[in-house]
Image (cartoon, rainbow, N blue to C red; front, side, top):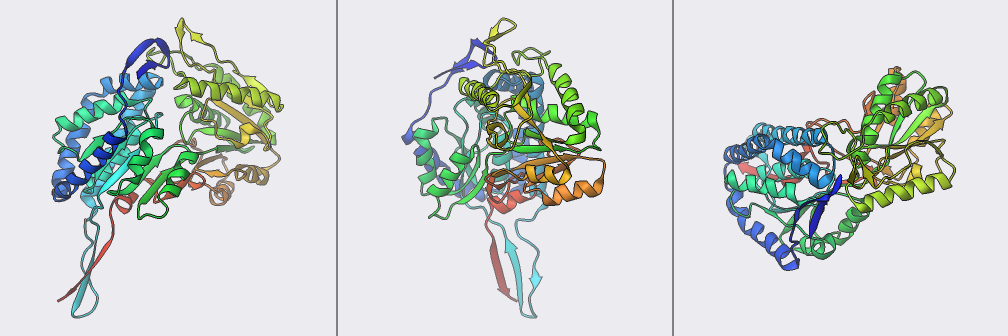
Length: 463
């Protein structure tokens, strides 16, 4: 399969051979065979090996950034930020593994009995990752899975295989034992069920659409397979009348149009209190107009193409439907076939105003650089609108009133909430957790990694 640069379709990134069901099954079997040996490696040694992996990734960050940009389309600066974020997540998890005990301290139950709680590894984990962050999502799953003594099979998106390939070359150079982590690149429709149905499977960490994620949940429902599902989102940014306008505008531009809107925690609904609505829209549109669209390899570009022809079609259809439903186009709305002489999957950063709660643009996750702005009569109405969604991943409110902010932070039905920060802001020490149709199971990242990648064993001793 030939892959082309989404920002310059004349450039062939490379050719990838997709594996079939037999190879997928073998990858799981081999990782299962490697599990006992890796689990017996002392934690300190596992940490040392994985730190070497992160050091090598950092040494190769320029190569990795170019790979991410060529296969995903995002600007080089965004690719560099992805690598920085990936390394931060990885180093946090290794530091945590060094601090958190593999078994909790002994507890005196009575004069003759003591107890402890152990956290042994489980076995083979399947890590299913998307195309929008082809390095960061793998690392934030793989590092904690492996450092806690498990083995893993990584199934990245078929659209972004080459960054994963570089990572696995580095794993080999760092002398991670063979089959501790295996890579399978193939179509989910052909190998997904093989991986999920393998008898050695102990857990799945998945990032992707709600449709695929819930399908995995149903398929594993009668088995003892641990699930960690980070799924869709329709994230709201609320701006109240007393908000810092400049900060709110910058947050909206950053979260709506970084990664061309193709990230789970992107802002896709902007809800503005009546008194701030017109002023915000003017400032927002002015800032969006300053984005420079083009191929991600151009260092002056800060807004790249969408990742595929399919994503471009989704954007075109969303724009068409918003117009048909009566939304007011404030800027963008076009999908040029060429920018600066380069053919690509380009979609202008697009903003619609007068979006109502019944419109497709307000309700459906589209995962493209098209955002709607909705009026709220007052703060109470804004909170009501924010909660009118089947998703509950991320949320932000901009207000200078801390009491109002607390009402929103406590009342919104989302797993990640922000005050005066954009909806995609996160720190390695904090979990990524979705409510409603945005997530299932123990959240990923932060201190919860040990909870997901280990099982609990209560040990009693007669003294």
